[in-house]
Length: 396
Image (cartoon, rainbow, N blue to C red):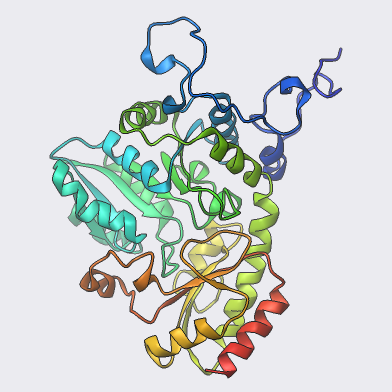
């Protein structure tokens, strides 16, 4: 028995491997007009299909066009989760999620070293809505209970922290959250689903800035929330009211980018490891933060949790800010720019970009000094990058 879908038979597709799911999971069946690439449905609204629930209408702001639906199915499949939702940015995903899960007067526990935008949202913006946050050391589970209150609802961590590359005790975070009736959330942007699948570890939700590895080409801004279907449904309703929907053309670009996620991230894993090892042995480098190094304080935990150590690292130079700026100016391959996860290597000082909105005292308390350099490895040849860094360091 056969069906009209590119000549494929009706047998169930083998999709155990994540690379296969990245290509085939969630795709329309049969293919739309036989198109191998998902068409862009650049229509704001669609014909009424019956029903009385406003959120069941097909409309871009409700994140349920065909372009959204394919992404939702594919994202859930690659993290072995029940459901997913794409949004207009990583911060739209964070905001919509937390504003769904907490009411005025309620609190959350969060890892103390987070992406600067997330930290600022929790520390400053949430006060206006009556939401509270208590920061904890993600690697010290014995201290977490002190942050609990009767109003605590959420425990929030990052898989690999931005920008110090710390790895929280993720298994303990899940156990602690569920033991105390909290929702366990992890920002999985830096690891990506290639290196870590949060649902398998018991997290209720994972969040991504899809601008980074999921999109992978530095040409969109997008976000995603993946996890338990009941929670995703609630978040989707909040997001529809907040208005942070993703345009269908951006959906198309994210969909295209995701198909190469596996090959990209594995290459970036290898390159980051090579650069980290080289820098850690250089006389002009004071410290390298990369969980793949045996010297990293969370190396053993990262080896146990992850399939790869990621394409991100940070480091400090002898000579502080001046030396850091000189090195960045001397490099010819990495581009001095914020963001990460694209095909080109990007280098920046977080104090001037990703964490510039974080008060200096908070940055210093988190261990983010002004001379810290963050490096996102792209798809260039590792040998070329090593040569470039060698020459740039020699000229410092």
